[in-house]
Length: 320
Image 1 (tube, rainbow, N blue to C red):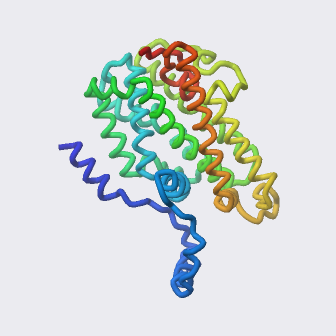
Image 2 (cartoon, rainbow, N blue to C red; image 1 turned 90 degrees about the vertical axis):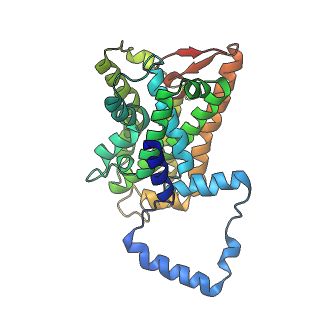
Image 3 (tube, rainbow, N blue to C red; image 1 turned 45 degrees about the vertical axis):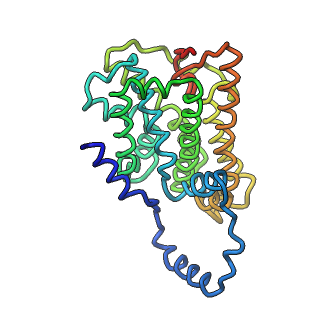
């Protein structure tokens, strides 16, 4: 009954949840009317054909103003797989704590802590979205109660593509949260600390959660080795990808959002350079796939599971 209710709620809210700036409403309405009068501007729109066109325009670029369910499904699925794996492949000891801690510590820690630290009035977008509630709850029930589903999601190739799915959402969200943090207060240091919080909140929150459950807590050098190698460690790659994204938009465009008289804030600047946003979203995913299959076949079919494979934590192995 509960799953049926979640599906019904997800179906009702499946439309994009777009945040509209009231100050731009009149201009938007005028532009729409003007377009209808001329009838020729549609000729300049990009052609969104095929699965790659759908992925690029309707998912990745559309995620700048809404949270596509296509990304949400894979992201919440991986978070729940990781939750059960960190519980010793067993069900979480208590569903009422597992539901909450799975959401806060294993699925959306970066979003939650970024909102708390860098956004005025802390809107907590991850906790205010019905679609997220539905997707997360669905996967929580499936992964916690179905051994067959849990084992399927750990299969070698399935797991690689699931983590890539997760990484695509995590990467594009890291860039958007960075934009909003710097746009609210255009200071370079704010962007740097946003990158630290986004990349560090998840692993630290999971260590705290493990200590609460009484499980052994690994040392921090096991969570993330002291290395700058972004080709080897995805967590390091995500951090430097955020810094690279901010520096290019700040110093190699004419937006000037860090200057005393900016032409555009960082959100507006990134919207004007959305192809660069797409590039910085796809690049970590390509690196991840190359790293994953290289590790898989160079290690004789062994896949590194958990944060060590996607975000840089412990080294558990999932064999053939």
